[in-house]
Length: 328
Length: 286
Image 1 (tube, chains in turn yellow, red):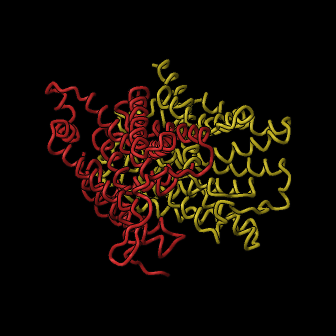
Image 2 (cartoon, helix red, strand yellow; image 1 turned 90 degrees about the vertical axis):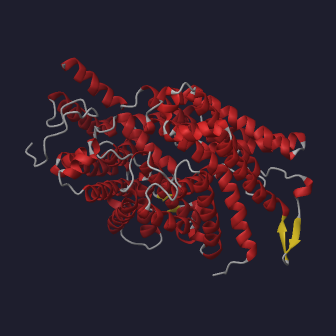
Image 3 (cartoon, each protein chain N blue to C red; image 1 turned 120 degrees about the vertical axis):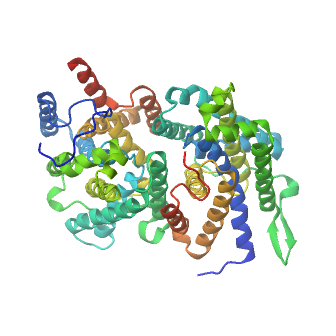
């Protein structure tokens, strides 16, 4: 793909596979995955279809996290909050103001983008652990406001409302609406990370000082990347509002951000579509575990610990480095 | 909108003292080991519960404090030697690992103690209020204030007047050099980690007597500690003290004047400080 970006860093070790094209293998896997998501609801019972809907929605959140964590080299812990702001706005708009769900979705995404832009202004000056800490603190502020601002957010009780438009009332048609939306969003994100802008972000990830001396406006790129990532998280949050018809402080809480990040990591940081695998794995596990025990938090924590120790590059990352090794 | 009075100002100061106790442990670990221990809040809560259990079983508040510090320091030992050793040198993986541990610890304390609210029983002579300057003020909160100052002095002496302190300070600046000089830096790291954890436990036991203990208390104290360290700068004791004062007082101002947006009142100054000093007021570049 033609791109004005300067020659990629030769010492880039983060992505072992070629980035410029997509191998036939990867294409086949994506086609297979898309086919599975398209066909599975036809044979699954209603409850599993709703889980699959959730998988798709959270994959968008995980991809939004991946844009920052994988392609920009800044690991955020506030995306649950950005996601949840959108959910809150959509539910509030439809249930308390009686507005149309379509306008609500637009407002929710706009609100999430706006929050992300503010976070970005503060966070882009930092990197590494400081970035993580700052975004964590920013996300917690949103959580604190949602918890305490009882007159608007309903506090601990949250807000309930029938958000879903009548046309999508049953789970089956809603699934396919989400499927279509997620397919479009995933394609746009894929184009985004491969665009000249996306390549510049990777350059910043690999060597900020080099990109700066090449004349790129690094802070502006980081700001835009953060805001765009927040925009996508907002889309996921709006879809979640329609899916769940309910929002409470736990939607914007730390564990939401953590789950989003864990999905991105499980799938493989910097693989974008790995998010679908991560989302499927985590939500599948969550549903499986909750059949046997209420200790999902512990399982989530233990997963985090184990993945950090044994497979920090995630499932897709593992496969990718394995394939790259065999090619050598 | 209410205005502030001396009583609320004192509340802010005592809260700052507690924050300092907790955040000083956090900043010590962060500064020396480069580990952002996101389980620090969970350690605080664990210390609180341990303190509650020991103090109500033995009837002695100070035994509770000791038990809290011991339990949490032991947990710190396990965390460092059992888990963190596998990811040494990877900053981000360390942070995320401690986050996972925080989830587990929080969930386990929920299993054991349930969702109820507990208060660590304060000793008889610290209950009630004293009268001074024309107002009544709870004795216990004054005790926390004094304890905060005491801990500050003790830590300052430890860091500046002892050999261990000199090694810790040197380790903050250049761990490789220390190692090259034949000093077992691993042991110093471990000691610091346990000391930092013990401070979280102390904070939990002390804070549990006036802020009460409940399942989400760990996240709240963690955010405050993060704000303190972001404002004060990594690894700086004075930074932690100044940061704790700023956050504690701002939090009180926020709660009195804008109860629903107390968090924002901390957030504004934090943002301003970051804009001008990304490493915090007293932070030094690594």
